[in-house]
Each structure stands twice: as structure tokens, then as C-alpha cells.
Amino acid sequence: MYLRFDRIVPYIPFILQGIPIIIAMSLGTAIVGCIIGFIAALAKRRGGIVGACFSGYIDFFRGTPAYVQLSFFHFALPQLIHTNWPGWVSCVIVFSLNSGAYLAEVMRAGIDGIDKGQIEAAKALGVQNKDITKDIIIPQALRNVLPAMFNEFIALTKETSIVSVVGIMDLMRRSSIVQGSLYLFFEPLTIVLIAYYILNKILSFIGSYLERKLKYD
Image (tube, rainbow, N blue to C red):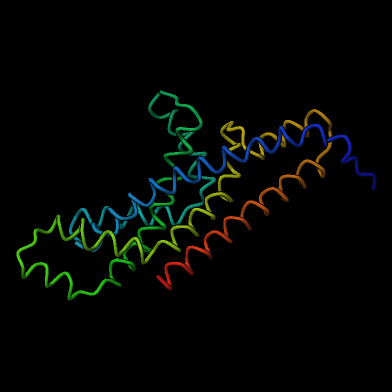
């Protein structure tokens, strides 16, 4: 076995330029996913036709792989409606919906964890439902689920490794370019593995810190 890490040293900065793309996409889709998840959680709690539709949405996105969802949305759907869109649009939409489906159950648990006495007291005082949601439910639910939300953000940074399939210049896509140029596979992929590991260890440390702060504040 003869490894040539010296040959890929000049390409390491090029590969690592994919990290900001991963973080930006993960953070953006996690934020949108939180909004979708909160709306889905409220709709599912209220039931009815709307609640059933959101339940179906959650079940579908939790029951199918993200890779298949992204491939279907970017390659199969345009064939059906005879139009195309950039790869980043597919990634943002699919990962936001995927994240929202997982966060919906987390949000529902966060809402259920709120003291019902506060809501009943607010209603007794004549506070409108929209104000109860805005001033009581949302702030406390977010505090309850913030650690889980951050864990979803970390999970998204790993799931985004599939965005290269639609041409996004992330770590994997850049690694593939280097592989094709140098005909080396072990070395570029080792750099990607290490980069993902270090990135997620840093994010995990930040998540643990936030969880401790919330626990003792």
C-alpha cells in the first residue's frame, strides 16, 4: 500500500471550502424546518383534515430516505412538470421539509411540556389565542426543545453530504473533483472524513454548552 498524501496537500484548501456551504445550508434549512415543524405540531394537535394532512406529510418524510427525496425532487419531478430549478433550490426545499417532519414531533413534545395552568389562566383573563401562542407557547416550547433542535442541526450537517448528487460544491463534490484529477481516492476521502468529524465535534460541544446553560438558567 502506497499512500500519496503529499500530492493532495495543495488541494486541501479547495476541499475545505465546502465547509461554509455545509454550515450555511444546514443552518438555513434547520431554521426553516423549525418553523415548519412548529406549524405541523400545532396542526397535528388540533386534528381535523389539516391535522391529518400534516400527519401524512410527517409520516412520508420520516419514512423515506433523504437521498431518495432529493433525487426525486430534483430529477423525477421536473420530468413530470416540464421545468427545472437549480440544485440548491432542491436541497433547501427537501432538507427543510425533512427537518420539519422530524422536528414536528419534538415541537409537539415541547408544547405538551408547558404547564397547562398558564394557558388556562391566560384564557380566564381573556387573552386571545394568538397572543397565548405568541407570548406563552412559542417562547417556552422553544426553550424546551432547543437542545433537540441543535441536535437536528448537527444531523443536517451530516445529511448534507448527499447534496453533491445535484451538483452542490460541498466537501464530497470537491473531493470527487480531486479524485478525478489525481486518480486518488483514499487520501481525499480521508480529508473529508476528518473534516466532518471535527466539524460535528465542535457543533456537539456547542450544543452541550447550550443545554447546560438552559438547564441551570
